Length: 286
Length: 199
Image (cartoon, each protein chain N blue to C red):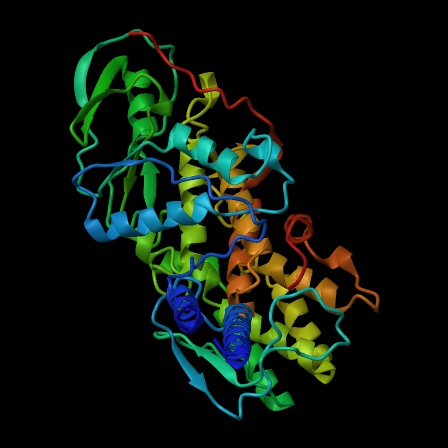
């Protein structure tokens, strides 16, 4: 008995020394498990590690405030709902050197549609929904494309195919001053970016892939950097930043100011006449 | 087995567990959430730290652990914990005004892709945080703070997001006095109203 009593404090000490999870959930809700995402070989290992860390944080986000769940069309902001939402859309990640031109499979009759042009991918580019962009290009050209990702030949029959291209900018441009890429606050911003891009998996008809709208005025006048949907990519990203921000009891004032500036920027991109749009993703049956 | 051993053992366990709990909860403000390698500096002079982010009436003084200061490596100007004299605060607001994001300057740098916010948007965050902390701690600085926030919210060349954050904070710090909102553009007011409350 005396021995046990001597050993117990040691066991307690060892227990205290176990790695404590960094992000602190406030809800006490159980973690939901990580979103399963497949990495193409083109994604560098350091970027994989950071994305993994972000998804780990999401699995235990523990949001208390359940408002605005309609923006994501989910019942609540539980860990489980968030995981399901992202897992449905965020399936494959490819690196910045990945060739997204796609293989032509065959001609197809799509409905005429004016799509966004796929621009060149530079190292400062943060992230883009490659699957959605290729789908829109195929729809415009009347061609069914496929992409080889992580050993899988994926036919791009829907924007919901869930292929995302990430660049160094995701880890360097999205960086709160005075912090490191693996600091939690940067994970919050990257997760908001993931959710933003994941929204481009959705929509149908003219709203396929929830394309951005040209801003009629303001800082981004003339740029395709606004949303005509109140549940579009910018509102989706904004609500994720705001959830993390609202329960970041460990954020400094400067970090909160940083997040507030991001939230303000995202709010400013929603056009005054924006409406709620159906997020069901279209797909074709080739 | 002697009774003394049992008592000592139980006391030891309780003490260690209490120490763990104290370390766990108080450590939250000082340990990097990500577990990254921040250096901890303990200094007896760092007595005026910002309070931890908890909802508390403004009349209650800071309850932050008084002797631990976070120093983040690579941190450019994180001095939110400093106490400013009036001239120093004036200097801080001047620096903040100069650092406010201006689209014309951002475009001059060749930045063309605005799918996501340009990083210049948040370069002023340290100063905005320090200004908020200062006003919280020293009410004598509030008039100068109001002046800065008003100039920021009215500055036509500054990005709307930053103007909106300034307007939100201006409304917070003029809560007990009249504020003519008609001089601010509707879009800035709309964004300001959609923001979380001033920290």
